[in-house]
Image (tube, rainbow, N blue to C red):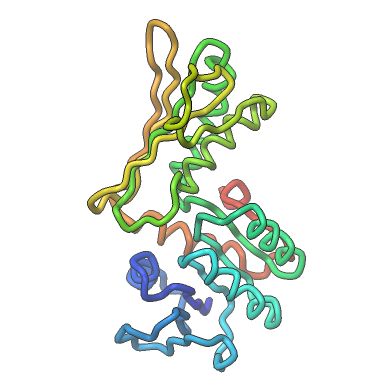
Length: 249
């Protein structure tokens, strides 16, 4: 039986993980962590890691960057593997995560959907074929509560393109202040926030006479919750290191 703790248990994704866990017969929800104990949960919820008395096999983190980094010292001390599904980390924060991965197993992904990661593989192939003749743009749409822009998934898609193209592309997040035409070697980002949209990502390859688009739409948060639980199963008993969806797939 795999025991799970959820960092960010009050949030929508934390709630979704709790709901989805019922479909897994080999897991139990041990406790949760959040900045406030506001939910009516049938398990302990801690606002201070020093008060924890039960130690899980794996922590699933759907929170915010500062909460993730507050949790990692606790995980390191008790050598608890961590699934990080939080996004919006700065470069310095990411370096801290990389450092913790030397001491504990960490599974990190900006998007827990299998099909999104299949999309990255398709993008690599398409980019090699079209990049020399097409401009590349990424459009992402999310609900009005999402605090980071562009999304971690949009950056992940761009990075998959850039990596296969020898990192020759720069990223343009805001053209408002520019009075010049776009560079061919740039990837532009457009972020839309509104309503209750779970997540939509489109990559456009725009050439002179046609446009090729690849789009992924998530209709339910269940896909992300399910991915995080599969990652937790994968991570148990793994050696220290930083793992990704490529390792799981």
